[in-house]
Length: 542
Ligand SMILES: [Zn+2]
Image (cartoon, rainbow, N blue to C red):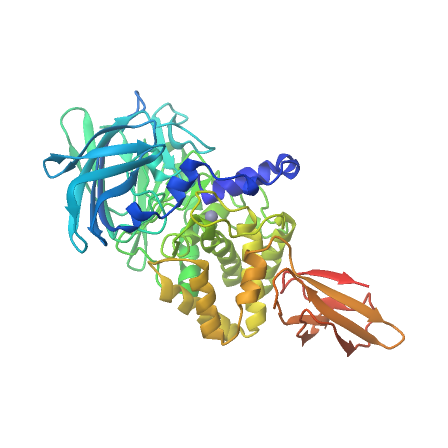
């Protein structure tokens, strides 16, 4: 399920969710631990390369083939953990000509080797499988559908449930292959668009054609995608970057108009962070029957060829209708999510808070600072503050929706703490450049921001990411004395954050802590304002 699917689903299900208890307290299932944990049989090896070579039968909704998995051992061992959904059959697993034994445990496949695999050596196995994958979640994970004119339309979107719902792999977030080949055999009349650079197609002579793609960068498992359909292709360029677009023939005119927004989007993000991360693979935008997903170098799109999000003003302040939310949000993940990737699903805010914040940067780049702020603060009404953004490590469970909106508002709060835009732009650019193509944790982000700003921002990150509630600025006015007393009420011990107060246009910075401080003010309780559009905080006045 896409990061964005969750958001859309929760947004639509909000009245229901408001009554349901947060299930974050429910104990994780064995399957969630097997999938989420980076245990011994995952940590003992490092992925190098996949060649996924599958045949897809649209009529039978059947997939078969193999994944060749090349990995380097990091420790001597005789077993590794891979994953494949229980609905799919393991046909055989080969090391050269040797057939390997294996043990299945819910979605995990523990592969046993007859002799010790040695640390530092590279091994390659062929994992053959077949079956009818289950359609699950709002986007189906792998969905065998028909387009409006009756042609097969098969798409994958499997974040959350995991890529192992349709192909065997080491299905976790910490370790990525360095590169990947994707070969997809489908009936002759259809087109497959997968990730990476298109290498060519081969008529197999049996009514099927194989489409070959090469991913020349590290890639998340859930980003690996099939898009099989009656697609029309058109192309463009942004400088030396190839842009390739795929839409159904009946939508071609709308697609040509709407997909033109990709150029401005890429220019905006390149302005802030540097070159598009997957230049050799190109940038693709592909029509799909669901709202959208950030598949690396092959972003899927189902936003009705209209601005806003599913034709709504997404943050409700009149700015979202100026651009196509799905193009702007899902493509932001090329920088945050695909290039920089969280090493554990608990830290998924590194994908979603940042991609949401990048929407704001896009607005700022196109329409200026004021509109950027207005667009972003439109998200305040979607924040719930019911559970921390960072969830339990090592468990396959998606963090709460606050990772998007509260997360983006928090990043904007950091900008206000830095309070120097020139430094902020340098910090953002260098942060991205430092961690690009890497899998990182929140601690890496905090460490980097602390080092580069010279501030101790750890309590601020922790307050916003590891606690449910917002920090509240408590203000107590004494009209007779002409004073105001102030302090932070926060869950994080040591939380101290400067904040701008006073009147709009005449802000002054105060530095509240957990202890009361008092200052003179000519302003009354009603006149005294807090810059809550710059700092996402609660305010209590007495
Ligand atoms: Zn997203």
